Length: 50
Image (cartoon, rainbow, N blue to C red):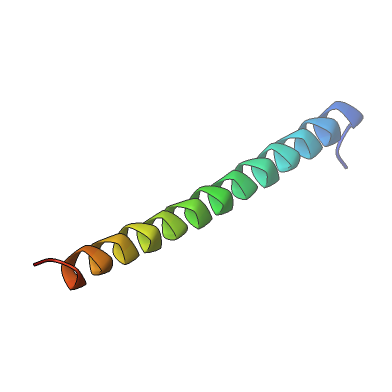
């Protein structure tokens, strides 16, 4: 059986882990979105090159 401070520490650790995981997903989403923007600009540049 866990004591009360241990349970609070575990809850805090889980909350921090969940927050960090959300930041990782945000970073991944922005990164993939940025890659697509760069790819579209490069495709446009290649197609319109003289």
